[in-house]
Length: 354
Image (cartoon, rainbow, N blue to C red; front, side):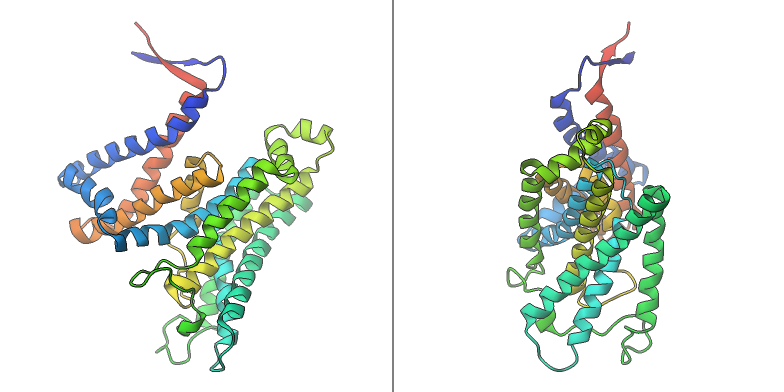
């Protein structure tokens, strides 16, 4: 029989081993799940994990889905380091996509404008839309001491309703046969693809640059140091004169801006218009990505690859094995619980109890 025994200090090795162990346990649990559903476990895992990496086109789709996941996770990592629990990246992504799509539709009226100018303005509008939506959470927390977890989560559903209003009202395509959607953007105002025959767009390069920029910000700048100290030791930060109010606003605005940029890249990239559903849950999945990556910018890149693999694997399992769409959410949920369980071993060790 095993028992948990407290460690004398946190295990640095387990801090980095835990995500890998969690992924392996999730795959093991997935094999058991396939068996319970009457499928061959090895075939199921092959379809779920191997098929999405079979060729370059599949890999490019993996990288495409990684882009919004990592962008959202970058912002969430900043919040969580500052001990600000933003759960509403999904709503901030939706608002970013809505504002970016509105800007593109404003210029896409038949007269050709500079694509670089339009895409730049759309990206900035996406950042502003996401940051403004996160700013509501910051304002309510700052002024009324509202719980940012509940506020940011509830604002996600308000953002979804706002999007539904837009595609059924001011942004609705008059020639769209009454479907709730905007018109399809002109090809000039879509993000350029990096490779022919692939949907992978310029946003992927921007995401990589953002990882580098956030690494410098968090680990090489005084502002990032203040955020981290405020999250790890609020009393020490207050004694040093660091403003908790400033940390709250900065972390939420950065987080919302990154999520909004992810939404802008979605509508100007693979979607190409404003639809009632801009995201399949990237903002929520990014929470798992941030913790798999240990709240580190390049760690979130690895976590994003894992979660995007689960998205593609879920789609493959639906088409190849006839499994329901909930299979993706099941794998994400298993990964989260396995990660939480494995993180226990950072502060505790397993001992055999005779």
